[in-house]
Image 1 (tube, rainbow, N blue to C red):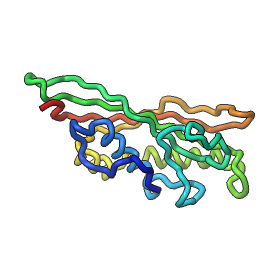
Image 2 (cartoon, helix red, strand yellow):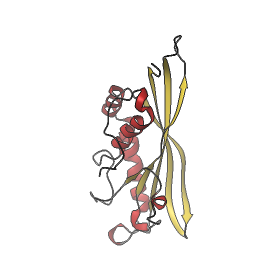
Image 3 (cartoon, rainbow, N blue to C red):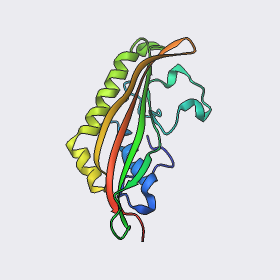
Length: 176
């Protein structure tokens, strides 16, 4: 499913550093052949740019499972002598949520769905072809680390939760 406001994947440059680096990773994660929606639904939103309840939909158990990919934090270092080139390091927080509170066939499959999504996430980020594609877009050195894995309680319901940091770095022209 296409999320409006997210650019197509393309080369990152100084004019679209934040938005394009985000779009490239968002599009990689939002591709169902990379990370399958365990519910098998092709028309539902599975990857969000912010937590769904912020979008006014409430925190319905029918939203589960889902992924939230937050905007990147960007850091500049190692400037060239002319100060026109820099090493740029970015980090995005990716959160995965699942719950046993889904209805019908999906009830009590929250942990299994969570594990499936996390396994797909790690496989997608660590895939050599994906790394090569991102490097071609000037977004190299992509890596993923686990920040937090927990079961949390929300409205007396157990939610399986994982927070991951996806990092990348670039060496690019940052000023004209």
